[in-house]
Image (cartoon, rainbow, N blue to C red; front, side, top):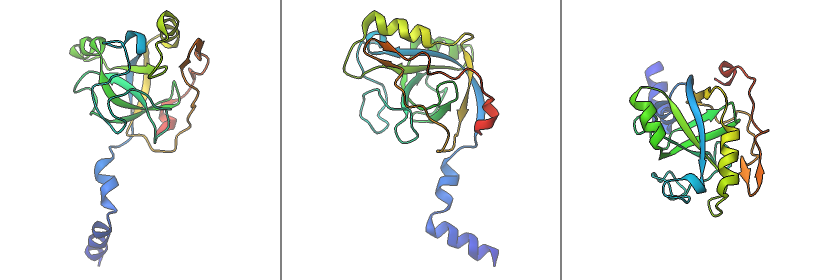
Length: 177
């Protein structure tokens, strides 16, 4: 009888999400930030098309995750993670040189997109990125997160406005799995 029930579940597609979604777990990662002025080359171009073309962006929700960069092989391309420090979902859509150097030493590192995909915020934006970078840089992230975690959609940087106060330094990462 139970084999028939399992076969019915397979036929209606209940196994697909279980096969694709990895188990939720906590991973420490160095956090840095980048945007239009310090992207290489400057602009909004990213390395991987995960559904929005080759343009960085996102609001930080599960359905519209914010772009992050990392080293090839550190995360799966288009993998969605959750960052309790920002209370944002992030998607691996780009690569970064400092991440590559860190990953060669097995140091996890995410570089998170800030600002506009059309406006270069210049030195003001780079200064904001530095203010957003936590001390110490290593903060827990959630891999394989559920879709309903708390989200703060406040943009990290909007022309001349740095929202460095929209970070959450006090939390227990285990509460997000």
